[in-house]
Image 1 (tube, one colour):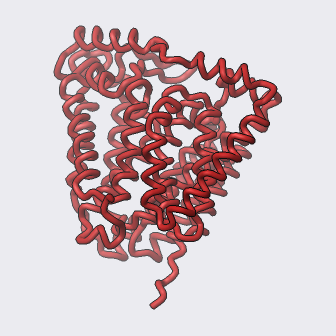
Image 2: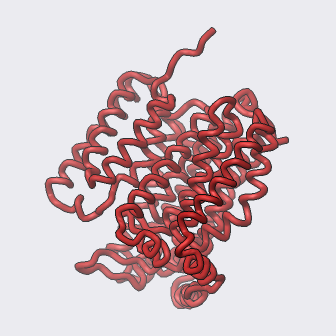
Image 3: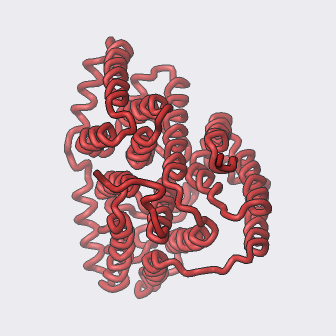
Length: 445
């Protein structure tokens, strides 16, 4: 019996979301994208029994903002509030229509602990507790908690391939926006070398982080595909090329370490291993030829730039030492708080980032914050290894690579990372709750 067509899990829908995101980013029209997304969510709330279709929207909404200053006007803020109200109404309709009984996911324990630690962070300092930076940090952790609570109640179906395709369109969006930015530059190679890329919502390091998170899922879909694997392999090579193009040192180093075992495993487990091997060989040859042709006149400069990325700490060690000093000078249980050494002026709110989430938690949120963070991380990885499937391996690779990158940069408090992290966490929970996840996937070979 032919399966019923589900538009909100189809490739057509996913590509439509990606097109909306890239177009609205390119023409600096984020409110149009938000308005379209609100209408889509309203339609889903009225017609669907599961809101799985919101996952690609959640995963890509961050990337519609090419200029954050455009949302600062009163009119735009009112429009955003109106869109949020439409989304809330959609949720209410969905809840009533499907007689939804809210449940508390076990994975919420880590998120709740993080919120408590964020709320209490710096409480003993007096002046910093309740500051603008404290409000932002606490607001982010509360937002993460509420979003995951909603997702865990409205998304019911464990569909690993469909979910992995969300990361495929995230990769498509990243590749598209990056190369649109570069092609708009008068001196493209110089822009790459000097790392001038700024997409509005983030810089080159943020692009690199999202891409290394996405690449294992692109390989997973290529591995599972019978006829379209060539398309996903092409995207795989484009994402790898884009990681190098944004000159994100951490992403390049981590990808270089993981790329060979990931790729070899994907080829081994592909539905047509020999054909996939041929595709990889052909695309690798074409990539080398194109890279040489494109960079021939600037090859020496590019190689020197990559070498200059080097393994220097770029001030990270000094930041980590300062974080430990700040921790020692504050309450060891509650930390210095997000407001510590921060400011709020005409340029906006600034939080002192230590470029390592574990040290950040320890310094800002004390021992309580570090314990809460370790509980959250432990839950995520436990769910990845509890039922070992090919999909969970892709999730593990993406989480490990982005986690390693997080040891030298800011990750856990930026939206471009938080959305993919929440999506992976949700799918791992659904796989645990699935009575027979192997019916949707295969065990590791």
